[in-house]
Length: 52
Image 1: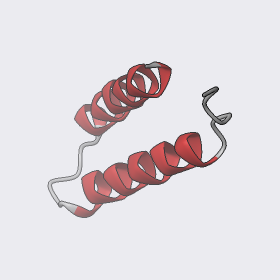
Image 2: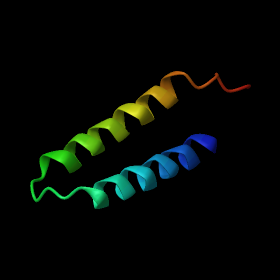
Image 3: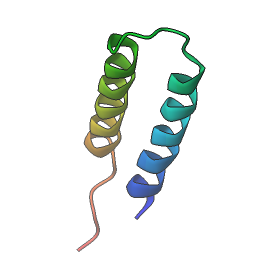
Image 4: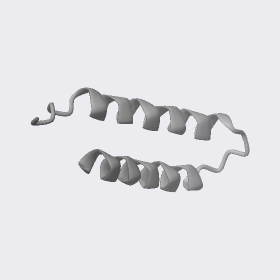
């Protein structure tokens, strides 16, 4: 399923960005996780319908 692969790819990218943050606070990671969730919802929303 391509959307699962895209989700894992986005998660690894956000994880890499989060590891580069020098802040000791939790809000940057929370913001990146929220962006990941929103991007995943957009992928699902605009995915073409399945052929039945």
